[in-house]
Length: 233
Image (cartoon, rainbow, N blue to C red; front, side):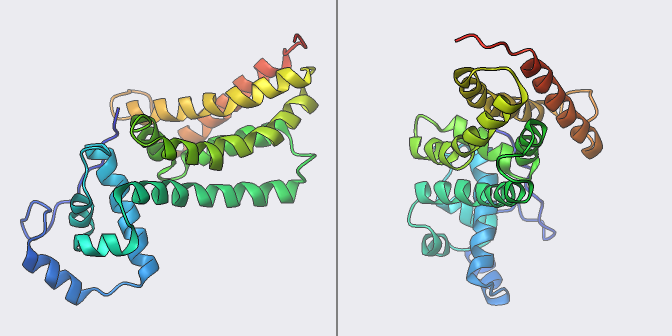
């Protein structure tokens, strides 16, 4: 279920793997700040892990993709697993910060159910988020810490405010509101993953504008279903 990432061809005719001379030349020409280099390594790791699968990928593969030595990768990340966890944490951090700011602006107790649903959709529409979710699902058995990190950073924090929004907007009991808060983020993630997996073969239009409309459709469907939620423990 891995999502392929195309590798940009090099203009010098090489197939993308750097020779030792290439790497030395690249390092002598480009001296990047540590935070910039770290970000480049994370980008390269997402591409390599998605293409090859986490188990088959090596830090040497990541180094080749970025154009640095394996020692440079080790300078920033002690192991492949630490690189994977840092990748997930990095990709989720921005969405967490945005969500916190939006909730603070709207007022945590007053935010509408629609706003919660739209935020969940926007999270998975941000670059790299769906790919990280797919990567985590693919490697769940091998790297349970990765799944726990994604759950702790994205899924679990959304539950309490979402439960309150469901309770305010529907006649659902507290227990039903809790159940809804459990399944809704997973439903939104499932739609986002499905679109990402099949966009290259699906005849449906996947433009940016159309994807925004798809997000509105997901929101309306979920809201409509919750409106008929009767309290039944």
